[in-house]
Amino acid sequence: MSSRDPRLRDYIGKNVTQPKVSLIGFPSDEGVKINGGRIGASKAPNLIYKELLKLTPHPVHIDKHIKLLQKTESLIMLNCSGDLPSDHENLGEKVSDTLSDQILPVVFGGGHETAFGHFLGYAKSELPVNIVNIDAHADVREFKNGKAHSGSPFRQAIEHQSGKCRSYNVYGLNPASVSTDHLAFVQKQGDAVFEQSVSVDAILNRLNLFNEENIMITMDMDAVCHADAPGVSAPNASGINKEDWLTLAYGFGNHPKVTSFDLSEVNPEYDRDHQTVKLAALTVWYFLLGVALR
Image 1 (cartoon, rainbow, N blue to C red):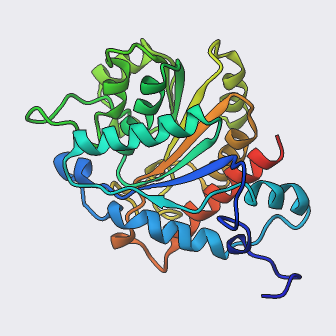
Image 2 (spheres, one colour):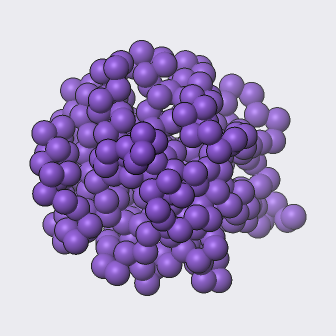
């Protein structure tokens, strides 16, 4: 590879010392299955990572971008057994260890059950956190037959005995996919904004208002319009556009209070020419660029 044409694979995971970013794969879609969705998201983490490694550092901000990439660890793929509570605990332990070492975890899901394991990292570290979710769905459903699933992670976080979820805020809701009760439940915890009212500037400015230092970001690819992201667990006929989505990813990465990130619900089984996988990889690229330019 010519030094004039560098790729992320030339830097990520190469003799990393004093890492600043840890990439964690959570190849689970057991929660999607329990929730009655279309399975396949478990195949996403490796594919997203492969596409990410093909990308180039930002040509204008190359020095700062490369400096962060050299402090970014290779993807660590967790073993998902299909026992969701056990898998959540496993992810929570990994996120907790990463946070304790002052390393920013970036989690590749998986179904949106990823988000609860992600949150458990804060609970295990006894760190209060504000959750910011970009999603077409509120994902505060009750358990199904006593089981957690991809539609319940934020109810689980809100009701967790640790009390570490200080607020839950979701932007990009599809009004045809949210019940009155779920909307009211979210509004008691924080913000709930429908997709047609999404303002990137307003969302990013809102981060400055949270009293607690830690902000956990979770981005569900089904918030994006189906035309831009066909390969998801629950396709969205409306949704926000990919430009706003990527601008948010960069803004989240650039915000000093953001201490972790996950990307969920990419389903390669239903993708078209890797369109959604590539958008997911670009999402992580923009987030990392934001971190590099803090």
